[in-house]
Length: 403
Image 1 (cartoon, one colour):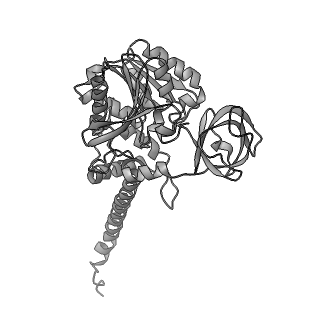
Image 2 (cartoon, rainbow, N blue to C red):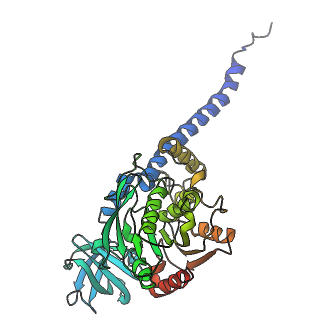
Image 3 (tube, rainbow, N blue to C red):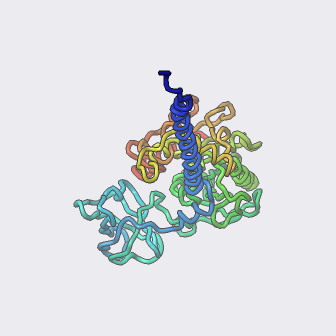
C-alpha cells in the first residue's frame, strides 16, 4: 500500500501567519503614532502656539475660590476670607498673589491663616468693585491687573512703531539716563512684568512695558502663531530703538518666560544688541524643545491613562514643525552662547512646571562669569517675586546698579 499523497499547501500556510501578525502590529503601531502625533501636535498648538487660543485663555476667568467674607471696605488692613471651589487648598498659593473676579482685581498679602476649609488673607482692592460674598474668583501670580492702565502705577500710555504697525506700550517715569524694557511671556499680557516697574523706576530707570505681535491691541503675526522669539525679536528691537531715540544711553532688558526667549533672540540677531547694558530674566524660555519635552512628560495617553512616551512626543514635535513651522533648533538659545556679552541675572523657581529650571542651570554652567542664577525654593512659574518681593527687588536693584 502506497503512502498518502503529501499536502504541500499546509506548511507554507502555517508559516505565513507570523508574517501577517507581525505586519499588522507594525501597521497598528504606525497608525497609533501618526494619530497620536497629530493629536498631540494639536495640543501643542492650542497650549503654546495659536495666538487666538492663548489670548482667549488669558482673558477667560477660571475661578478656583469663592469669597466668603470681606472686612471693612478693601482698604489698608482689610482681610478677606476665601473658600476653595475644589477640595484642595493647594490653590491657596503662598506669597503675594493677585485675586481676580469678573468686575475687579485685588491683591492678597502673605499674612493670613488657613483652617483647612477657608483661607484668610490681608486684602487690598486694586481696581473695580469689591467682591460680594459668594463671588467666584481666581488667584493670579502676576499680582497686577491685565491692563497696565489699571495697575495704579501711574504709567503713561503710548504707541511705538514696529515691523507690523503700531504697538501699545506703557512708560514708568524716572530720571536716570538708561531705560529698562520689560518683555512679558506667552500669556500675551504685559501684566507679567508690572512688578518690575516700581523696582526699576525707584532705581532711576525709566521703564518701558512693551507689547509684541499677537498681543491684544498689537498687530497680529501673519501666521497667527507665537514664534518664541524668532519673529518677535524685531518688535523688541523697535522698542529699544524708541528708547534710544528718546535719549536713553543704553537699555536694560527684563524678560519673563517666553519674553526671555525673545530677549535672547534679540541679542543673537539685532544690530542694536550692543546697546544692552544688562539683562534680567525670570523663568526664561531658553530651549523650547526641552520645555515641551518636560511638559509632555506629565501628560497621559487619552483613554489608556498611561504616561506619554518620549517617542510619541518626538513624533508630535515633528508634526508640529511640518504643520505649524516650528523651527526647533533655532529655538534652542543655549546652543550658541558666544554672542551673549552682557551680565545676566536669572530668577527661577525650583517647582516650575511650565519652564524647567534645568535650562537656567545649564545657562549658568555655560556662562559662569556672566550669569548669576537665583533659585527660589518652592516657587512655581514666574513666582520668585511672589514669595519675597522685597528680596527680589533688592537683588534686582543691586544688579542694575552696576550699569
